[in-house]
Length: 440
View (spheres, rainbow, N blue to C red):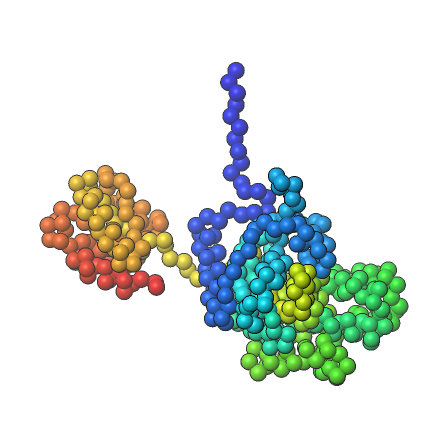
C-alpha cells in the first residue's frame, strides 16, 4: 500500500503573518515614514542581532518579569548556551551603547526598524512577531531630550497625515508618582512597586477591582482614596509641588518646552499613567488612538537612565520610544490615512511575436536604464489583448506595443490603460512621457 504523502499547512505559525505584496506595500510605507522622520531629526540607523543571550533580558530591571517568564522565546544552542529571540530592542541598544559610549559624541541619536518575537496570546492589536521603530537619545539628562522624543513622535503622526483630534500623547513622571505615593500618601517603599502595578492597570479594569487590589495590599481607606484621585490631578497641581519634587519639576519643564515648540495641543498630563516596564526612571509617555472604534494605547516610551549600568558604564542618560507596526497600521486604516499604492511596474512592454521578442527586450531594457519600472511580458505567443488584460489585472497603468510597423518606423505605441489614450511616437518621447507621469 502506497504511503500517503504528508501535506503541510499553508498557514504561518500562530501569531506571525505572511506579508503578501499588498500587505508589504503598507509595511514599506510605514517603514519609509519612520525612517524619513528619524533622519530628519538627525538620528543614525543601527541594528542589533535577532538572537541574544538569555541573561540580557533576565537581568533585574531590564525586560520585566512578564516578558522573561511568559513571553520570551528561548532555547539552548548546540554549545549549551541559553539564548533568546529578542522581544524588544532596548536591552540590545543599551548593550551596544555601553560598548562605545566613551568614544561617541554626545548626545547619541540612534534609531532602528526591526522585528521581535513574544509569546503573546494573539488577539486584536497583538501578535507574536511584530515590527517596531526604536528611537532613542543617549547622553543627555535634561528634559530637552524628552521633549525631542515626543516631538519626533508627533512628527511621525503628522507625516502620516494625522491631526490632533486623532491621537493624544499622555505624559507622567515616575519620580513624581514616587513622591506622591511616598511623601503625600504615606505609602512606604515596601509597597510602592506593588501599588504602581495596580495604578498601571487602573484604566483597564473597574473601580471596584482597583479598590479591592489596593485594600489587599493593606492600604487604608484614605490612601485608597488618594490613589484613585491621581487621575484628577492636573498641571496646576503639579506646578505647586515642583520645588519639593524633582519629578514635578521635570513634568512642568517638559510641558513648557512642548508649548514653546507648538505641540502642546497633542499632549495631556495624566498622573495615573504608569508605564509597565521596570526600567523607566523619569518622564514617561504613551500615545493613544482617539478613534471611538479603537480607543487604545498605540505605543509608549520615556526616560530610562542607568540601564547601561548593567554593562559597567555608569550614569548613561537615555530616553526613547517604540511604535509598532500593528497598532500603527490599525490607526491608519481606521482613520483612512493609508495612501493609494502604485503598481510595481509603471509600464508593461508587450511581445508581438517570437520574431520581435528581442526588440521588446531592448525597449524594456532602455526604459529600465532610464529609471522607469518596467515589466516585460514573458510569453511569445499570447495575443496583445491577453497581454493588455494581464496589465489591467496587475493595475499597470501603461503598455507599450511594438509590432512590425513600429519596428520599421522606429516608433512604439504607448497606451494609457487608465484614460484609454494611445499614441504612436519614438521611444525617446515615450520615455519622456512615462517619466512625466511617474509618481516619483
